[in-house]
Image (cartoon, rainbow, N blue to C red; front, top):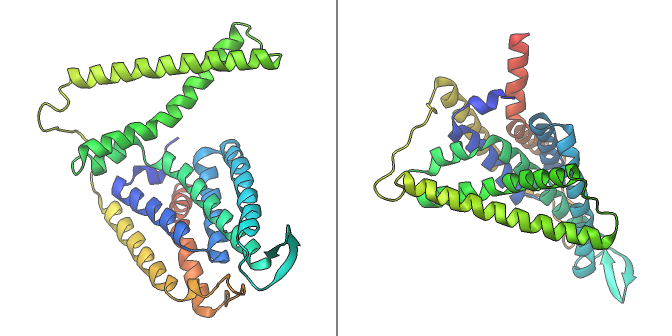
Length: 287
């Protein structure tokens, strides 16, 4: 299913998704983390579906819990001591910082699921193929390797089930896993050889490459790019003061709900929810 944001010029899409990822990485403000998580979750559900999102959420939840537990065990900064474990103080500030760090990583992981759906190999090569053709091609092939490997594993597993191969005992499960890994490795190497031969037959590296692309700038792309750039600039300006007033050490606290901070949060939410707002506008327009 094609969504409206897929039809925009790749540079506009890349600008948005990079802004969402970078802003999620550089702020530990609790309100910003919540906004980023909600926006990323909503867009991930819209792009990938509820079932795929729940699979991602299970992994993200485990990662969040692990980071939230590990940080106070090794980081003892803070003045509010909750209790002692192995003669080491467990502080409230370290717990809050661990939760914020876990939430930040969770947001980044969910945003990357949106990135994989929005930025296809064709779009990535169109943006960076001329400036750095070798690096762009390598990155494109690496990013493509993950979903392709998942598909191959699924095919191997389904073929084994169709042949009646059952892994009832631990020994059989180990043997089946080794066999599946061997098949996957052979299949991947065969594909690599075919790709190399195909590139050689097409004359890759012989002369300066040419390319065909169906992507062209339109007035909608220019207007959308200007709006996203303006929102990015406004959020950067707001991050200089309002978003950084909350601190974790030595005492957790800060002015989260200040008037200028609320404006920044609204702009941040509009930026992250921008594609969903476009989809909503399109839905209202056609209905």
